[in-house]
Picture 1 (cartoon, helix red, strand yellow):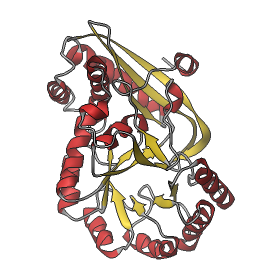
Picture 2 (cartoon, rainbow, N blue to C red):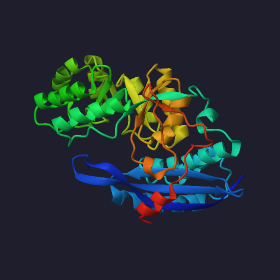
Picture 3 (tube, rainbow, N blue to C red):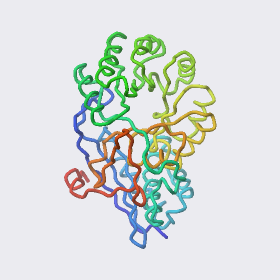
Picture 4 (cartoon, one colour):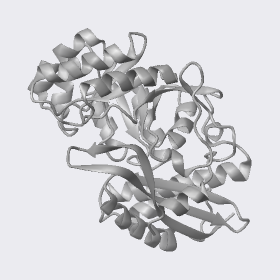
Length: 365
């Protein structure tokens, strides 16, 4: 089996509701770079990456074209580690970030080909821990620009849709009391039976985290995510030892080594691993194994169409982040059962195919 051709698309996927990106600008769409790899027998594998910062995607697409043409074409898609290493050598001057996104997008397409060639879904090829459904939480809503009334109403709507867990955002209010009020009204809307998490996106320092965390205690949060700069391992260790709420971090890290560091320093309770930042499915699994060796649970970040396979193959994965940024681009939709869990795909490969009408409507290049 050999990869003989490729195609790269840049496509915008509209959002249900525009949101404020890191407090900098409002976005009504998420820009994607989509990679198609084809074998000599006609099997096509899909890989994709996305960003709410549209100006970054053309750079990724340009780099993708060079890498695929010079490193990927002509290779056997089953030799994933060799391809991963070759991309690393070809992009070593880029450093983390672009390098890992390139590796990941190619890796997703390789796994899609392998699954289709064997007639099996990727999660089963990875070991197949859960064959029916995996836990998930709603994350496409409850942003910082939501008013208190919107937080309360939307949390209730999500609970009625069947979500048994959801995440809201804090980190931009002027006072600890205001941050605490956001948590209170969200809990009130969601109800007491829903698992509730909060994401700060590095908006605080250690002192502010301690102050606001006390306000959150009455709400009963399952985890507090990325309250401070991800590089401050000493701060994370201090907070992990101090707070009763689980401390969740990891999404801002690239590669596998940072998870060794987080575990060694005792700087987290739950690891959030991004498959793009880890360099793909194989990189995500390596990071998850590091955490498993230290008895630390993991959760996924973004891209639920890929993450559902990882969760289904990983006993220590607690939940999939349900973020619908890409779902409109595919013919297949992720389904949530009565228990609020994602159904595990049964189709070969990643189990998704492009919705050509949506691609035409959103195509930029």
